[in-house]
Length: 363
Image (cartoon, rainbow, N blue to C red):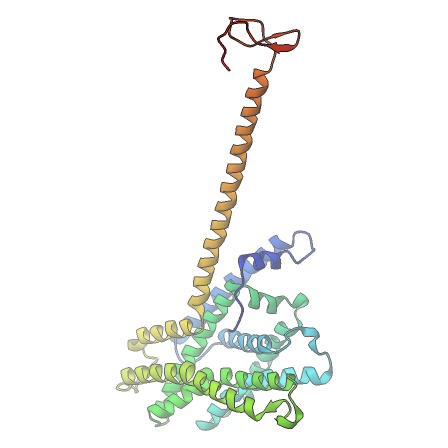
């Protein structure tokens, strides 16, 4: 999930945006309920067929949310007021739908199955609910929380790590059952795991190019120039090679090599539960789950440090005030009237301080 780091100050400012009295306590209760529900559903989905190759409804919905969010967050203008026309709405819906289902449809065609999008209305309902939450929620609440809350991004990336782990297991298991080799398993793994990500990057690149103003004489189509196409193609190739081809190739080779001797039971059998758990941790790390956890730790330490510094400054200020008050009291008490005493002392006569006639003096 691409995002900008959210500082503690920014988070505090975000919490103070609402003018509704008692908004912060209600938000805390709402977010606590969200995390409880998410963890409960995540555990139920993770225990479904013991980390098998089939994703449940909840984790599939989490992937839909992340896909729609990532597409909107990558647009040149992420505000909902960027365009309210019918054509703009249709472009957003069609692009989001294409990003979500294009790669999966291609995988289904490669293995000779009906695409999941045509197998029932559940996927349509899940997609449009996620799209509505990210684009039509009151006060843009859902999008803002996914963008600025590290805790929300933590659980969302954790859910997507589980989703992609199961897609990897599904790709390898399907390739083995259809008689394909390791290369076919790798192709299916790339399409099922990072297919939507690669599709989204391509769509966002097109959106960015059409949003820019290029010289008409250098255009190929829209706002795309030949120089831009060459440069971005090379950069995109390197990014795909380093972030998709090499990592997924290594994971596919390891899982294929470990489990290729026992395809009768399949990789989802109990002897490979530890292997599947390891793959889950790898994909959770790849999605940025542990980066978000580390960032939460660092920011909590920064907040604690700021609080300690403020406490020390307050304590020091109070101590200085007390010392100044004692010093002032001592000076005032020295100027007060007192009866005449021994020679050599300062005494007061008729309200005026006088010195003793003696040569001895404390001054």
